[in-house]
Length: 131
Image (cartoon, rainbow, N blue to C red; front, side, top):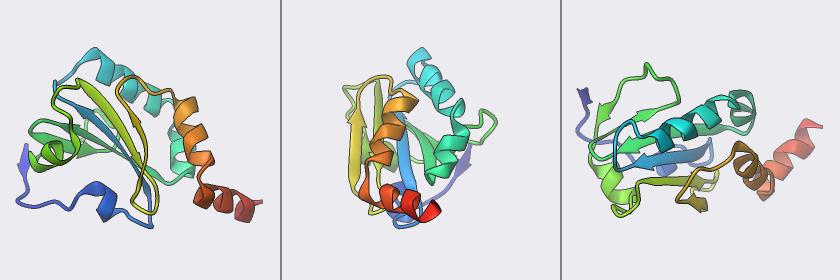
């Protein structure tokens, strides 16, 4: 595990560039987290089209993306900042403006996630410009 002394919170680091989805777990390798990651992985094209970057956060580390081979980076701060220690799974979506747009404490379907993003004013503007 790689140690990095300071990492800016992801919703600030990507503000105005990408939407950020945090998948937070107080346990490692739980079935609920695995199911959530599989759900997101099955919709990568749609997530990329919506400028969505995913961070997986656990008690003592994080990793960017959905790739199982990605390296975990040592960082306790993000868990302290974002997690409710009483919850085993949390999913938090931040918009391009850095504001929290969705919070879930259980499995989030890709359909619900994409509907939420597509209802955002900036996403609607992106879709109009694309067409």
